[in-house]
Image (cartoon, rainbow, N blue to C red):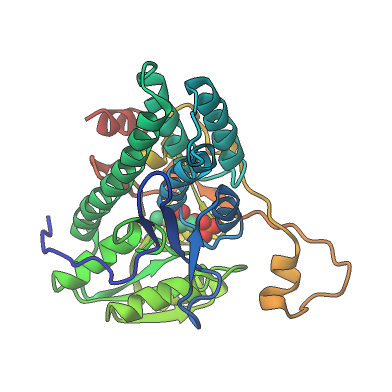
Length: 362
Ligand code: MRU
């Protein structure tokens, strides 16, 4: 295993500021990167919901952390100066805020996982006053964030141990510090491998239509001095054919019990191309990304987004007015196409339901 310590990125996708009653969630607005590094002050649950919906904060683990803090922020209006908040009232508002945040995006299971964890705190403390519970909820959100950072470090170590040296590594979408509370999932493997002296050159798919690869992954790779080249999604097959790619590594938004892994649209194509070219295809994700209630990838809810993301990229019209558009934001790589799934609990290889359950229960 490669155990070189890797420093965390200097930027943070999310940062809690203040206490449980008046604090807020500071977020990098990822929709304006890389040309502007702007922050949003998430001081209402509506702002946090909108930030998740509009991909100002994005990436499965980061969405989960944002939603956890969103619950704290969403309960703050109850605590007006001098107000006596009953536990009943608190629980009612908690259920309302949890439901609201759960409707922001459907695919990344980390969102629902984090919300459930927050709701569980209330269930576990039926005797607690509203004020005490609000404090506990902030502690839980902070624990979710801290755990995510630790999981990223493990994913980085495990992932780097699998990556070959002296070769190109293909990645898709953005899985770095911007997508997590730490240094990423698949991205952490790249950062760890680079820090450990592996000679890798990252090929980043631009990731149509919202260009998380071009805008965000390239920005993070360049910030960290990792050798990299940007390609369009449709070039992935050609760079593989030219022998430039020794492995591909991606993140995930939801992984089923049999190991089917949903991730940004285009991931399935990368997996198929890797299979054809006999290139290892790795998925890296924390255990919070697994949904063991689902067996098959086809049961994963796939978010469909507005047509203008395709017809008007960056606001400029590209397609004829009125063009029919299909815009699924995710697809899934079936387990048979995945060489290994890297989790903070260990590496799942071969990817079978028995191995998924075994590694996750460790
Ligand atoms: O729509 P996005 O940008 O939230 O999609 C993100 C991805 O698909 C990532 O690859 C995934 O969430 C893993 S992030 C560590």
